[in-house]
Length: 230
Image (cartoon, rainbow, N blue to C red):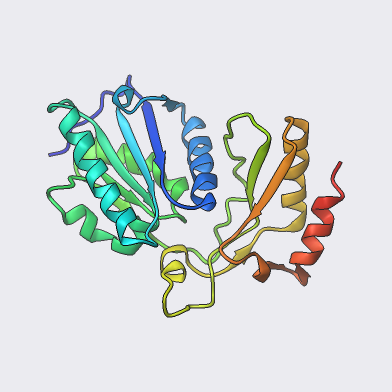
């Protein structure tokens, strides 16, 4: 049986590994959970729920995450904590992660299933069993979620997700799914909002931004639209 976190406690800590897209996805996750009144904390030992947003490009990154999970469990000295794995490792290794009795993960969630995260956390509490969703979507682009960012100068914006190239050496199409692009209008609106919030620089992200395509509009068109924002 999994340890149930009392409903009065909704403190979450998240660690991010890997690329800028993972950094952006962490901001999406923060926004999704904050809408459900979860509170984020700065220190792992303050949290009731620990999320690890992972990278699966390098084997060393995988080992680092495994070691981190064991460290968190050991540091709690038997006190209840829920640990969830997000990101590319979640999709790449899927159910194997939940079946690993040494890891004792509570939930595993892939990059296209973050909107289901609050429900999966509640499911773990209700059933006392681990839960997962690593479904790859042909449509999810999170264009309806505004990321929860820390204040600063530079902001990330994911303009497209996934990759269709299936290079021999690369796992991205298998962990991030097929290409889909956000509309230029949606992206420009996010840029305008960032300008209003005081950001000075915007970095456009994607697994393969040169493949950006939305209803006949390519990446060059998008760059022109974004560069005209004042």
